Image 1 (cartoon, helix red, strand yellow):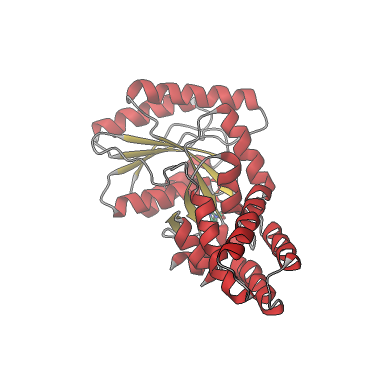
Image 2: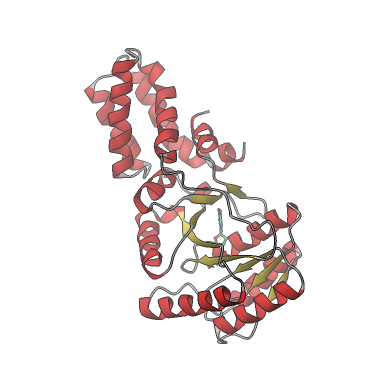
Length: 302
Ligand code: GDP
């Protein structure tokens, strides 16, 4: 279980504390729940999720007449999965077209792991038998194009690029034409991640999207935002800003292996109403996992 491996830090923090709590309390009472709340907050599970979880746990304890604190562990994991999944049916899988070109647009600020994620996703789709191409749409940050090319070489997919400072929309136009001509299945597009000027960012993304929409009906099929799990509340703020400037269809939460506060996965979907589609669990090519709430919670508690 990749989740189990990647969640070592969170498990050492969160699960160990829950286990300790269960060991210290023989019966489930108010104090137990108060301490549990604190543990959940510290793991970045998020206010709303914690409140909902504790409320539902209390009801479940009553309903099942749970006395022994040991019996509550499985109820916690079951409720965490239920709360994450909710009843809104947000689709966690990537929407890949059965026929024709699928365009996936990546947004996110610099340093969060966007390029690495694009590389990993390209690898994964290629392994699934898809013909993948990359578009070097971050023409702003020095070295961004080269970095994407390094990943392109590593994975063995073509990268469509122009020079640094060129118009990202022009790069996208080229990339879409090439992808169509070469009968690619998926085109993954990088974009510049500067948040300093929201108006410019919005204009740039709009222009890029317009070109893609015009050239490929129904595209972009996904707009994924890369967020760094180790930055907690910052990640949440970034997501809110991008949500204001463009339609975001999914979240890729990177560096989940690098944080003890993996509860952020649960908070982020609750707060933003956007599904987590993938999580990054390391720096290597195959360290990207499609998100699955059950496997995630199981990885935490097993
Ligand atoms: P970008 O500026 O958003 O394109 O970020 P990069 O892709 O260059 O990644 C920044 C750093 O984060 C690099 O050192 C990556 O190896 C590292 N990184 C990216 N994803 C993960 C992940 O899931 N886990 C860990 N541990 N490191 C990651």
